[in-house]
Figure: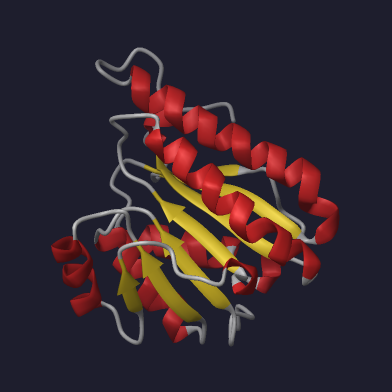
Length: 195
């Protein structure tokens, strides 16, 4: 299926890991111009670059922000509130350009721990993750009429990097324009949930 990503400018911001590499690979194959950006050590970024075809890895998000069509944030487990602050700054930088051009996609990739209550040591993961999901709800409400969507993929269970990449690809595609403010769990049904 043609995802309608040919020529779209995609920034993958967040952790420099295998999941990001799988997402970058798939979106590149779909014709998107992909840049991966990680607030990480340069050595980690270089490791991802070796695995990604036709993608550029930088340490900080590239300019100009008004040219970004798709921004994803593949996050890992959290140890501080900084991901919320970083993501808010990125969104403020790219959303006006998306809205001016008639649309764009924002997507977070988060652990299913954001929905877990009572997991040992999971309080910060849950709090920060819910903060990010709340931010997506606000963007969805404020910019949905301008064609900007904001969703999340929650990774857990035995989900592979490919499983995550497939879910991300659909959410950032031309086929998901009427879906916003959602968080979809990709875990094979491991974590029981009513939402």
